Length: 513
Ligand code: KIV
Ligand code: ZN
Image 1 (cartoon, protein in one colour):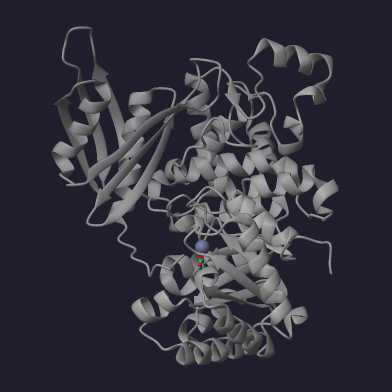
Image 2 (cartoon, rainbow, N blue to C red; image 1 turned 180 degrees about the horizontal axis):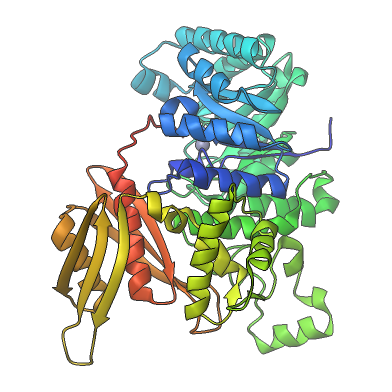
């Protein structure tokens, strides 16, 4: 059996299914480029048939990415599979990932199909996909809760039809490590042609065991692919977290004995990018990528680490990409220095106009903030900020007045398409007043689900504030992110960014899982 462990990243597909995490084509492309730098083996770029936006995103990623395989999800029907193949046409290395539910519950209640019908549909789907692509993954959705005899029958058939990877999802996060590991092992033993395909694990985190279950699937079950997402992003409690499984396999190489292609120094930049883009903050005590993951606060620990690092550290912060906040640029930095730093951060600026536009924004920020860190540059390029000119709602000006004991008020000027609005309002605080001013003109009717402010760089009140706003309207949940040294301005930007997402009506077919 191979000792290479394939890392299949599904941040852009399963991660994106998390309510409010939906990303634009450009946001997805930027994250895909970072995943390529991280050297993940497979990037699941989206679900091409779910919407035109996702089709375009998969297509753009397929054209841009050269060092990772690019994959699209597809339900087990000809239309979805043909659409995935079309989106993947430009890829250097492509994979179609087709799925159909196999648990009694899903077949009866959701699909309203008999087991024989599901079996036949899986066969035809994989046959059709193999005619279009040499690399085909099959997933029996809710596989872990499926009848094992039926599952073995389906898996044997799809291998015969040419499936190259078999992925066994614990779709609802119900598994327990030993049991899941045993389940994969049993499947591999009972499916007669099991050695003709690579076995993969896909675990959700509803009981907080996605990482443990995935590792058990590898160690006990013999799987050689793990499906995971950056920061564990995903619906409900999320997916198996990439940074945790990767660092577990790497740090405990003595136990797992497996090879990884990953460049771990790209983990923290990837985590930050996904968090900036989606507005899903990383909890401070999150393993590997949390702000406290390498912070030793207690005196005893600090003393130990100073004497010998490995007294309390099993990994080195720099090995996963943590670096002290570095002042990279300032007010006097020129266009070339800026362009170079942007390139070093892996941000692709396509045209001279892009560079010039970004440089103006940088200069504007540098006028207001003396030290510019990598995080500030990333925030400058988070698509909510970068896309402002092309967006429907754009912040033009904001002023506010607040004084202790007085009711704050704000004046906001913003564009809605070609129309310029000027509004004033009072509120409990300057942020509230600004949002009320915006709403006095738009009357969106959206419900505010979340408002949070975070310092982009720690340890200084000079940091830019990064605000996340989550809005819900008519069943849609969207996140908007805005950054600025002035948190009231950042709040207004974030609010308008969320309204922009609600404004773009893109509806999509949801994949289960
Ligand atoms: O969790 C799940 O079952 C999925 C499948 C679509 C692979 O995400
Ligand atoms: Zn899933």
